[in-house]
Length: 183
Image (cartoon, rainbow, N blue to C red; front, side, top):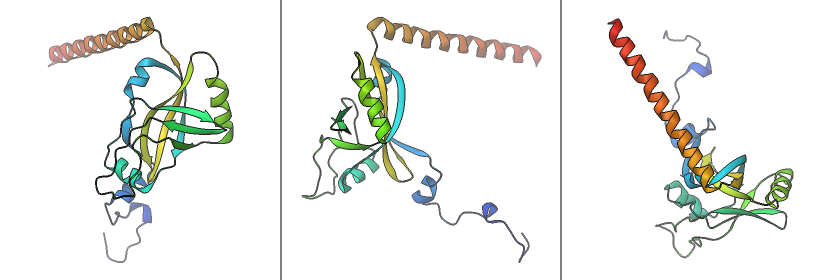
């Protein structure tokens, strides 16, 4: 690059490689996922909700230590609450540390809360937590309106996944054989 030549700002190299510049793109840094929920429930609709956290909870989340195994969402008094999400105490925290399994408020739009409340009242429907992640430096929860699967539905899903894997393997093997014949 010649000295004094104009270079548009987009094409200039970035100055720092800190965490803040990495997260400005709106990318999700996943802290915890509830894979069991996708197995046990038929996911009907997903929502992104902000989480109201204390300082030590955020620091503990940034260390990547949390569990969503028993977590669920309940609508109470027109507000969404996250129950049983296990966020362990912050190791360097003092007397200001948080309770490990306290209920935490979720931030959603009024129409989303109303829709979730009416749908969750129907038989067999519940609201589950799928993931907790950071987006633009803020803690978010991916929640879903879900319906419980029967045991045969779970087996059918596993069978379909296995069939899909088998067919993908067969296609890949056929392509490898064809490439080997060409060479």
